Amino acid sequence: MAAIDEYLKLDNQLCFVLYAGSRAITRMYKPLLDELHLTYPQYLVMLVLWEDDSRSVTDIGQRLQLDSGTLTPLLKRLESQGLIIRKRLESDERKVIVALTPEGKKLKEKAVAVPKELFCRSGLGEKEFMALKDQITGLISRMETRSGECEK
Amino acid sequence: MAAIDEYLKLDNQLCFVLYAGSRAITRMYKPLLDELHLTYPQYLVMLVLWEDDSRSVTDIGQRLQLDSGTLTPLLKRLESQGLIIRKRLESDERKVIVALTPEGKKLKEKAVAVPKELFCRSGLGEKEFMALKDQITGLISRMETRSGECEK
DNA sequence: CGTTATTATATTTTACACAATATAATTTTA
DNA sequence: TAAAATTATATTGTGTAAAATATAATAACG
Image 1 (cartoon, each protein chain N blue to C red):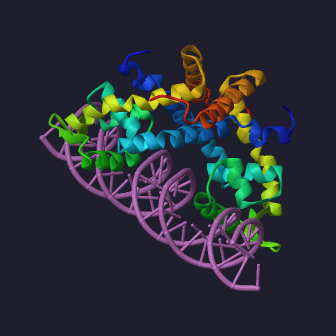
Image 2: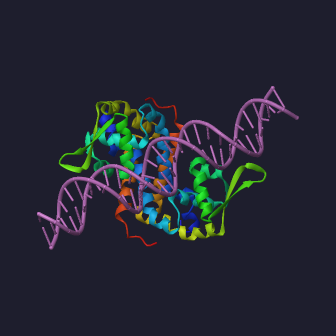
């Protein structure tokens, strides 16, 4: 893959398959998430909160790699749906703590259908599924640590 | 991975690594694309046009899996930057043909730095890089063809 | 202890991404 | 050959995603 043309072909772009793959999963999830009255980014936030009931906005942002400009409006919508509550930490009023309501906790059981559908539709065994996930995780990690090492 | 809890852990989500990976690449590309005065989705459109100079909006949409609501404003911005022109096909006035300008063609040579940077930062050999891309392509394909086959 | 620096979140702005709908052109049907 | 159906693109509305900036609170410093 030495020629300029090969480097710039859409079919050779790893970036494009990640982008297209992510959106294909979002499309696949949509009918299932509609039943839970959640959008895809809201579902990701709920995944974080189902692990640990009570987190700060910064914690959620770090887990999901999303900034507060994205999270604040999203959390407000979850709050208006009655799935979470937000309150300032008394000991440090800069921090907003996000906690699940009983309604929010209840959704967890229904939500398991979502990743099960992807697992089934992936056509992968459990080991292959996790191996692919781990390969992409490794890619992200190397991309972020090898900054400055490459010659243009 | 039988328990509900395991299915819903963020670290077990293939959907999340694709989503996070795609955005990590977009962040990595941003300084390089800023030099070309392109956003990431604009860059993808240019990749399509650098392969074939002249395409309809529908063609571009099919290649990138993007709909006209996304493409029309994006193409207008590329046009106002002088990189493309848009014109109705005389033989079928429903169709808008998108073609590169000389400026748009010239960008191709500079753009090759973008995928080269990813390739380098990925820490993968060429075979591994393409294998990962092919695995994700296969995943997308199976996800889209196995609709209806999975029990919730 | 007052000032400066840093941190946390919110707001504004821009660019998507997608669903729904509108408009116009072409194709198909009866 | 006119009407109905389909196709192509554009527009509107909503929800992100991120950059830049604003505001408020806490920590660090001299």
